[in-house]
Image 1 (cartoon, one colour):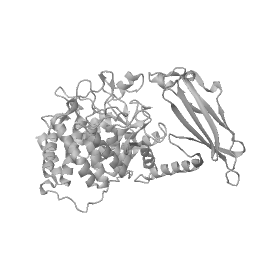
Image 2 (image 1 turned 90 degrees about the vertical axis):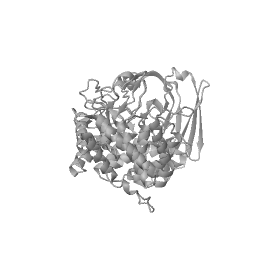
Image 3 (image 1 turned 135 degrees about the vertical axis):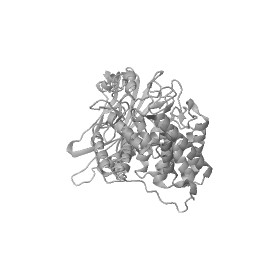
Image 4 (image 1 turned 45 degrees about the vertical axis):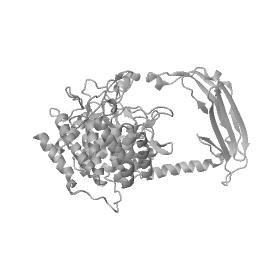
Length: 565
């Protein structure tokens, strides 16, 4: 049966004019249905039914089984059709359901019918070829996994389904079935979706697309539909851009692209952040990145109901400082690689100041972990997962002792079988169930709800503080076992956006989320399986100034000594 579900439309069966034609062709039957809604924009649904039956010898018979278009009134409408899930979510849940037709095929005598539903023109005679092509595509996607492992192959197959076109370039759908492409989600998901799976040309296409939309040193938070203005209400998407470029260079060795197309953009971004850009985003006198305005949500914890920003986090959020320091170190590395001695010194000095200030302002000695936000008032001591990035990112400001303490605190309060809670259950603002209407659900979105994508940085951090030992990697693999099983109980073959904070962690939100799949795949391959990028060696490397050699270890030791002294 072919059905359409016009949302929030009353009695549609009285307003639609249904036209259909049925013609016989050499390859079967072609049928086009045109629905005209009271003179408004036409909805055209092209349905091609290629019908044939195979004789016992394997040949194709010359006569197709008869097909019938059933358009009796009883098939056209169901009044007051109700959606249980919509009712539970506090949304409109009742409407009249319009079914334009039912297709019936006579399949007696072993006949076979094929129905193709597509947004593109298709040749009904090639139904078998289309089917085999899709099987091949899925097999190739699974085989793009860098390790021969069923879990990794399942994730690689899932990863392929988030990559879509934006014009002539590629981008990433953040989640199905609600999200489009978001700057933050794209940059976080890019390594897992494209680099680990060998789709380096797609990664380059994505990284080439986004600089075209950088404005005042900021990456768009969300790409709008045609004719709309991009939204720039994010402080972290731009910083994740740096890390995506770092990963791209590590996997591909494509210095020319990074030097010519990304490095100048990144340098301009740093300059904008130093002098100040939208929403109060500006480097303060401590060398850390402040951000925030009343009524605006800028971090990934971005739930907002009307004028209520659920987790405003104005000031200096902990993960933003980790990302800012990481970006400065990446720029120092790029500057060294590209022979920019002035830039290399500048970024090194900025990173040193940021690290010293971070350790002085963010360490919560009483709890043995990091504050979530500092803003001039008493710091926010809420135990949230954002501090894990201060350990998991490539460049860290923490001593090994502090890094270990952070991971242990996160493990104790936030780790679940499916990811990290967004807030510790002991917090009075904790919400363990993602249920109710929009206000109740958004109020729980980052107040206890479990996010699977955070399992990626947690595993990276856990294995790192344990020196990459076999024991740590086995433990991490055990932690991922429930997510392997989750591939069959949410969106099939995918990992959900969120789950309830309380056991048994019911899947919620999008049934398939790009960064959930990408970060689990990345951590599983790079950290658990220890398959790291091996980029080609450049034939003519840029000379490295002698004074920069060994600077990373020296800088970290100097910073820790200052903080402890």
